[in-house]
Amino acid sequence: MRRTRIVAFSINGWDSHNNQARSLKAPLNRLAETILTLQAGLGADWKKTAILAMTEFGRTAPENGTGGTMLMAGGAIRGLFGLDRSILEGAVFPGLDMANVA
Image 1 (cartoon, rainbow, N blue to C red):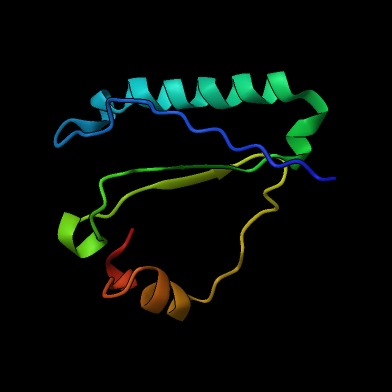
Image 2: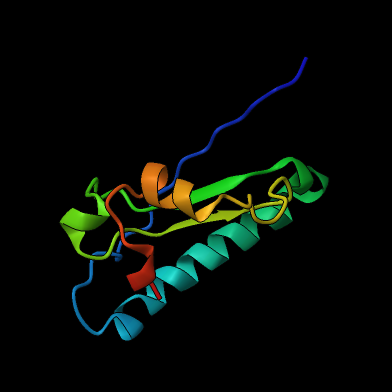
């Protein structure tokens, strides 16, 4: 039988509106430390692990003006998914003009 385990964690300090290079340094470091600790603790099971870290604001990119960030990590993540730009613009980020995204 295949077991699936789901773990959730929360790291505060992401809601910044200015001087983001300075204010996001601490939560980014905590996220990196959390992922590295998980990797070390899982050992060989790391190759079967997928991590999804994302914001929880619940705003769409047009509402927020910038959009959120999502990070995928882990041994089970196998590179880019290769989504076509039209799918990103139409289904994943409806209404977003990708030409203006750096």
